[in-house]
Length: 120
Image 1: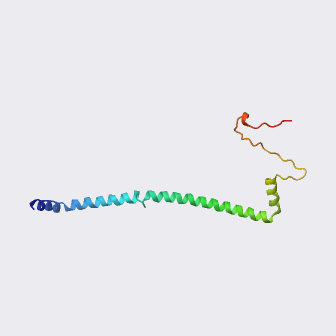
Image 2: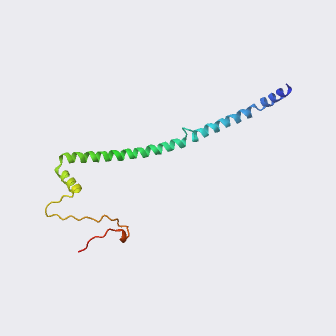
Image 3: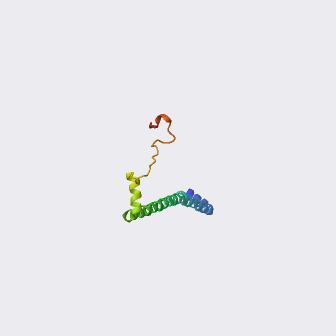
């Protein structure tokens, strides 16, 4: 019983230091949680960067969708667009036109890997 009273009186005398240490420890835990926790600043910054990336992808997809919709409308009604598409995909030419076709080999490939072509 004496030991308990002695420990109690020591703790009572140092109660301010103990309370200050407890508050400091609590503040450290809260700060750690605010920075590294599940909803901390690091996670927030990652999510913000991901949001910007997704926003840019969405804008690019919307621009592509608008371009394709405009191309679709042109192919439904514009005879020049229909002719241009037929010329590109079906390789149609008008009488008297000359078509130049680039070789399919890449420019960086060695000569031995490029296909042989007939020369006049």
